[in-house]
Image (cartoon, rainbow, N blue to C red):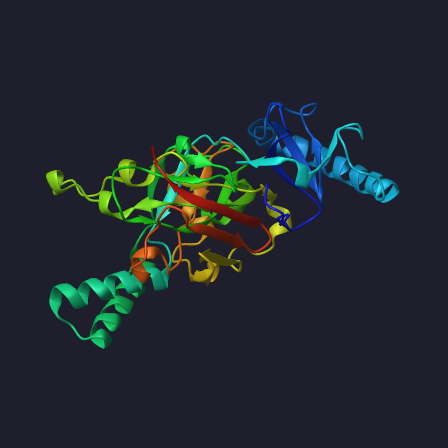
Length: 337
């Protein structure tokens, strides 16, 4: 784990961790310490599946941990202290293995306006001012009458928040897309938007990497995009470091999303720029599929991806990402075998 201990909102968070030479375990993060939750549930996914019942117990355990830390703050934290570890001594894994991964595309206004305006300029020869005005009008109409655009991702693409990102051998335009993700905490179908936030257990950070030059199939132009190939390579969904309970996050429509590529800020936007907010995303997704505890819903990525800057990932690059109150990711890029 990097020297920088990631911060999170609220009195506690959840994650999956590994001590040297040991098996992964679910953990309760309280400040710089982690309590092994194996006596509560076998995995973080199991905790989420019993979210309403276990949340009060987690709060009690966190309070006990604060008390213990206050008494023993001058002592080294080890496994011998009632199952508590020093966070800095653990490997931080992806916080949970989700059920479904639902991913929202084209859900940030400035991002979509930039894309549409660029296409209008190149294809129709419009001036920059005309192209942007047309794109703005299109966005206003989509907000009034449109619906979200959601597709499925593969859980096999997930890696930890500090793991290496391994570039696939096919394709060259490997890109970043930092996103706020939410974890569903109870089952529901056809969920009304006004009730949707009751179904959110927690939030986390996802970087939804994409190989741009594998996104469209030249042999199947009528079919269009190939999300499976472009987005689901192993390690192409760094997730975590933690699940932060929704009650601690505050207003999810006012969080800042920041990504640095080799130290250069590339994405820096708030979730206020979402076209369809979280309740509308949940309502739309649940109109097709039953949402279950442990499902992960990515809410879209703001402007500033590599395609916008004309810069793509190469071996040796470093991605650093954070969202207000949810912690920090740091992934080094390397080439595939």
